[in-house]
Image (cartoon, rainbow, N blue to C red; front, side, top):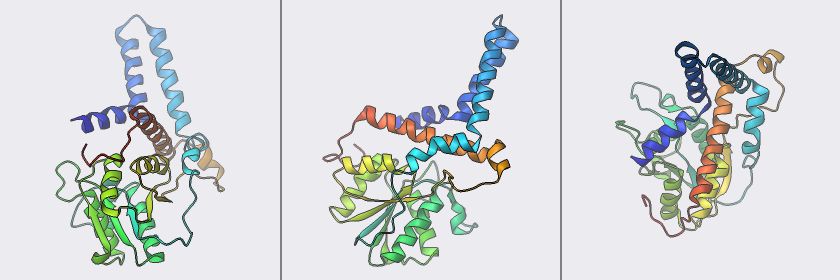
Length: 261
């Protein structure tokens, strides 16, 4: 129940649902109250914020500080495990395996497989519980994609009980002990994930994937025209900022806790 409540509240604080809610409140004030000016102000501010968050210069400026915390991993330090954290997914057996990984998940798995080809002696660990009534867990679907890309089943471990990053850190601690490992997740999620794993008494090597904030050249119209793509970048920045605030508020010490606690 708490996990679901956390997800619902967090989801409603993201830009699109929050700003649409504020616009709806403004419309109610305009149509059904005497506070016409307040309604106009609320709608105008919400519209302006939605516009700004849908522009590439604004969205990627918000996202970049999170993503530049760790560089792409191309070092040659020996590792025994490559841990790929779960993300968005579904499962439709009629689809190509990679189509079942949504949003941030496929780039994470692709980077994990790239790293495994650099460290073929390492075991790949995929994490993530089943979502809703899905018959397949997040970790298992990611593992299926890795197998379709050439990783043998003997090199794969699936941890399909953890529901969030905190639980993933606890489960990985049991699986890897003090062995050196790469931690693969989205670049914007990595600062928060590293904190969870370090608080669990682990020393992961950061391997970012799915970098989104663009600093290389773009066409002028791509920077000037609002787009749902750029809004999604703003959403990631705000989502991770909320996550970091919640993480700081909880201040968990995970060194002695067990998964699920």
